[in-house]
Length: 301
Image 1: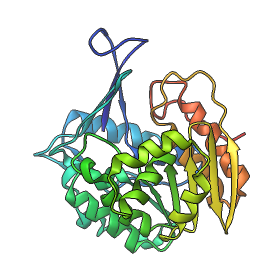
Image 2 (image 1 turned 45 degrees about the vertical axis):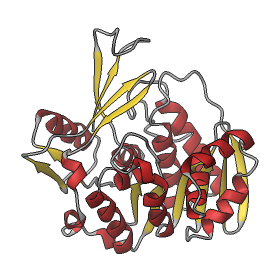
Image 3 (image 1 turned 90 degrees about the vertical axis):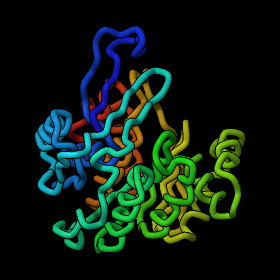
């Protein structure tokens, strides 16, 4: 998406200057991994408009392969407005909202070491939802999913039910505490809102139990992100670490940056504790700028 945010400590209603940037869960992670030395490719659809031109130029400039990004002459590039009070999406009838499985036909998915899809793809339209599932089904490398449950999108009212099949088809699950609780509760036929209440009340104490229940759906490795701790279930063992953040200018994009750091270490055969440290470093780094990716590091500590 094109991302617009007011500059300085102000709101859209008050600002006279905007940061013009790009954003999106999968593309953010691709940029992060490219900065850490990986060959990444982003598959999506953009409008044949100035916003799409800007995004292609910016992402390809980061070293991300964009050869499989389609351009739509009829539908616009999606838009996200970032305001201190929250995020607003404008993605209905965008170019990406009609991205179906056919977009993958020319992509050598089976040759990739890893593939990533998030719940945002599942929630922007029925066709992208189908494309996300096909990506996971065709993959032969590591299949990675971040639920990224979001409000204000086509499928947000059924978000847990729509994203759950992605979870069932992945090897590595990277999820927020509340997201994981919501998906598991929805699988028991309960309302989505109940899980968020549980997450807020119990904080991180139930994280290991959530991870083990999620692993029963299929993932071999489950990362659970909380507000102050992150836990990982891998090979039957549970481990946790604290999150230490400095002053955040903008927390949006921190989860995608964490994912990139964690994935980078794991793909290189690194241990869980090293992957967690890398993820925390990258997540903290991007919060120091308004952009989702501008402050992502080019090397790990």
